[in-house]
Length: 127
Image (cartoon, rainbow, N blue to C red):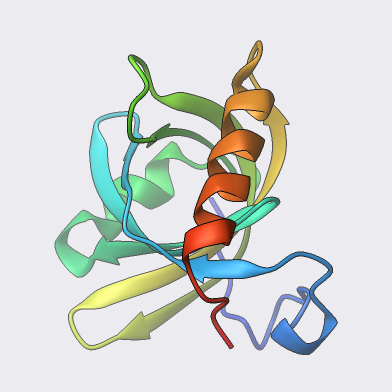
């Protein structure tokens, strides 16, 4: 597994984002590893992973791709998505992990897009 630091891996910076991102805390599961989001957008998220769980998260990644279950409010099941890991940086006692969504399962993309649109109406964009 080869997660690399943001200095070693290029990704779209906030000045080049085509989608708004919002500060929002969601519970996320990756093969039994529990995480949360710091911010979310239509196309990705920043995950918060306690350092003690990071090795487990790394082992869930296959070629810098990971399967995530995002627990969206008012849904019966998590939104399932395969995401590409774009960066992983240490911050105090956790890792901040940027992911780009690649492929949603079934109609989960529709659920996710509706959720993002709904919070976009009630929340301010993260700078």
